[in-house]
Length: 476
Ligand SMILES: *Cc1c(COP(=O)(O)O)cnc(C)c1O
Image 1 (cartoon, helix red, strand yellow):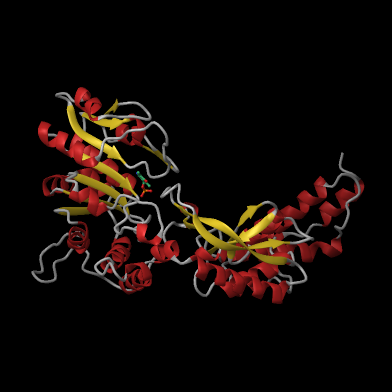
Image 2 (spheres, helix red, strand yellow):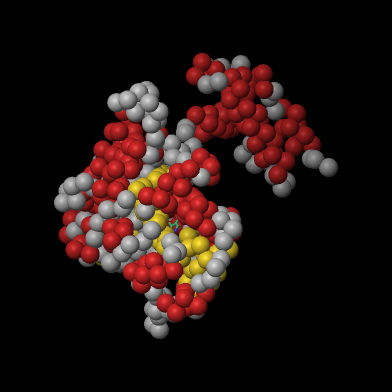
């Protein structure tokens, strides 16, 4: 039984046409599609109905006089949501450089520019402008990749998972692939070596033990059905203690001796030795090529710092077969990705300058002193503007590489630690996340941490403005 008071309120709810005629609502039709306005009005009326029905006894704070404000509020919020792109910029203050949920690599200015240029009109994606004949989309990056890595041939696909799938399918479908038990990795999401293997139509043969695999384990498992030896870079974890893996050159030697190709899934695909900057040693693509591997796969948007792509480099015969595999058509890269990838790769032609040109490399190598100065400047600004509401202190901390790359790397940084007496760290981060622009921060020991390492140039002002709104409780 709905109480009389509720009944009265429910029957007083306006109809859609009535709301549409309201002074505050009708002008919205000039700004927004009619269908959206109608949907927003229905939502507004429906929310009120639910609110009335859900009230336990007496209906507080809802009356016929509050209807317009409530319905119009819902409507405006709905319209704003509906016309704001779902995919939008986010300020990354987490300090995780390759944040998979935030789109991994930030593109280089050169790549952004090339993307803009190319998306304005047509391009020579598959046309050889010299001869007028049909060209190959891969030609735009193949030479760059072979020059940079030293490999004979190259191919690019949608992402590294696709690169692994295509390579396995081309080289070993219906036959056996040997993999060390310690390398059956899972990469965030749903990429798992055993599953990719199954989808590519190969039979996985595990060799060795989880912590130790020896060359003789491969030798013993090798048989007439063996089509490929696969080495997987354990990019996102490390095993310590009593361990042994077989080095690439040993596997290559075995493969040569038995006439079987050897492939390596490198994952991150760094093209530059970053140890001079204090980062952990990560196998470079060039080193794998030099070790004689037949096929090497890696991501475009991890340590390389480009768009999402899967890059395959290696021996001509194998890459050629992959290009002809019908599966390649389903995994192929599109022109916008190619444009950004080509521009990013070009930067690697000058290895001495590339760190300053590719944001991922720049963020990973920025000196701790510079980060401290940035944190100080941000804390000062927050103190000036919002001192009454929050305390901002600079403290030492560590950033992460992210993206499943260099899992053990501890990158020293200085963060701005925020504490407020009026709002909890969890609520403040939630408000920051829901704000416009959204700001992603870390929480540790009851404080909100803002790491300048991943805050892009020119984002500071937007950040403290967003913080101001979050502290005032707007947009929560
Ligand atoms: C990241 C990674 C993948 C998957 O690469 P995507 O580009 O994300 O598809 C595969 N293998 C290894 C070893 C990786 O590190």
